[in-house]
Length: 91
Image 1 (cartoon, one colour):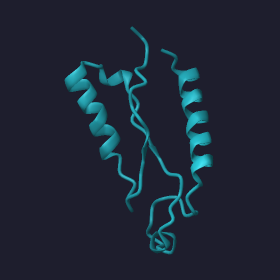
Image 2 (cartoon, helix red, strand yellow; image 1 turned 90 degrees about the vertical axis):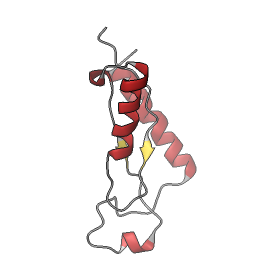
Image 3 (cartoon, one colour; image 1 turned 90 degrees about the horizontal axis):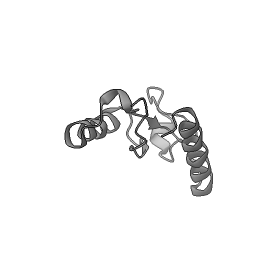
Image 4 (tube, helix red, strand yellow; image 1 turned 30 degrees about the vertical axis):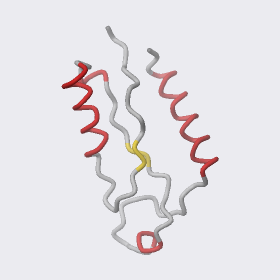
């Protein structure tokens, strides 16, 4: 008891409105199907930019207005983020 389940794979958002529906929905499945208590989960959305020129030029685009990181940079960032999460919430 008191441990956080690190069961969610980060969802990289590619839609225009950066909604949390997919991460929250995944955690609802973990709760309903696997019995993981909701307080032991952490829904996250990671915005690593976009290569969509229409979004980059849209004043109402809510995402990060920069070109998407390359594959190597994305994996390094995700590895660092997961290490920090595991350090903060071991288990």
